[in-house]
Length: 104
Image 1: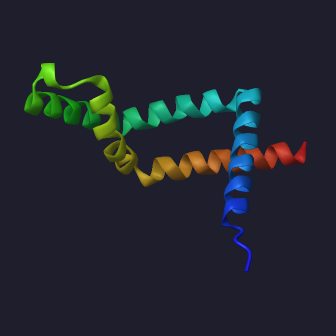
Image 2: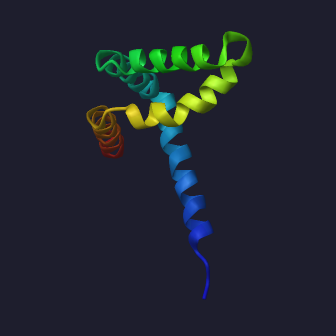
């Protein structure tokens, strides 16, 4: 029995790369990034992360924490803290963009 999981991963990766290229070429990627920055700021996400970073630095001491340490520790938490509404809005915008592109 053949294992197609590698083929699927490869196709998924190619599809993501093609979508990303289309987003970049049209300038839509920058618009989405700006929307994300605004939404995360509005919902207090950025403030939550700042507080968590300050807490880590306070616990370990400034001389014992690097930016890379903070990024590594905060990234999983940061992803979890993105509100579902923000994720859904971005996904909707991407789907709408792709639908419009396919109609051209």
